[in-house]
Image 1: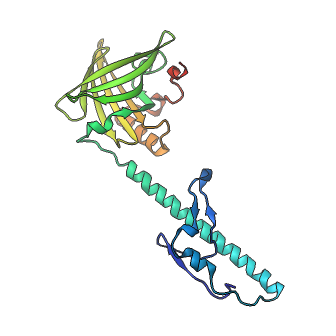
Image 2: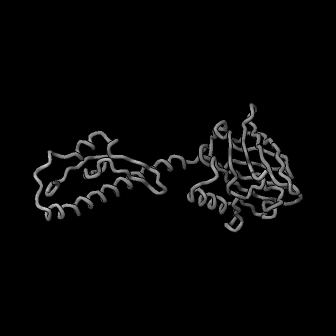
Image 3: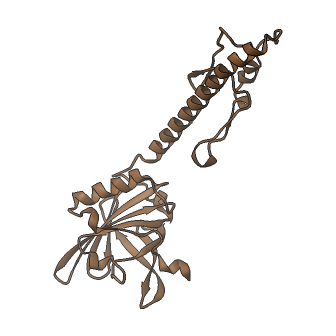
Length: 252
């Protein structure tokens, strides 16, 4: 029926052959459900002209491989368009801010994803700087209130810590195990947040970097980005600890 002739329908700027009326296209994991019938004009084009008298059975068999190949090309183009759309959407979320933060947008629930330090004893199990963030709240005076928890002698302890605002945007001070400066390195507000803590106490300096997410899973691209930030502070990948699944307080 389609021999010697192609009809092209433009969907998302990509020309396709109309052999998949009502075809469902699913991406990895079953997501990304699309139906060609949802695109105006595609259903009518797929229907084609009035059917002609059928040829011989041999002629019908010769046409079927071409129809299948057209369907496969259509499916691949749709999946490619869907993948490019998802990558574009993720790129929007990955635009980080490194200055002039809107701290009100930092408020809310966060999950501890990665932690790194030049002194591993302080962030490993039972380390005094190994904490898991639950929530951040911006106070009326601009200070940050952290709701955190950690394990102490086998018990889950929940505490709140207030970081006092300084004159520098995104920088705070904290009195805990010495003098601390807490600096927001970058954030996208709705996806991830990176902190740097500089602790001075007992005659030593400790640098701790933390990666936090709005969800417990962040993309490999963000994890690699955090590794690059750690490198700038002289912290190698061997000093980066994953925290997802390590929060024993979730068992209580």
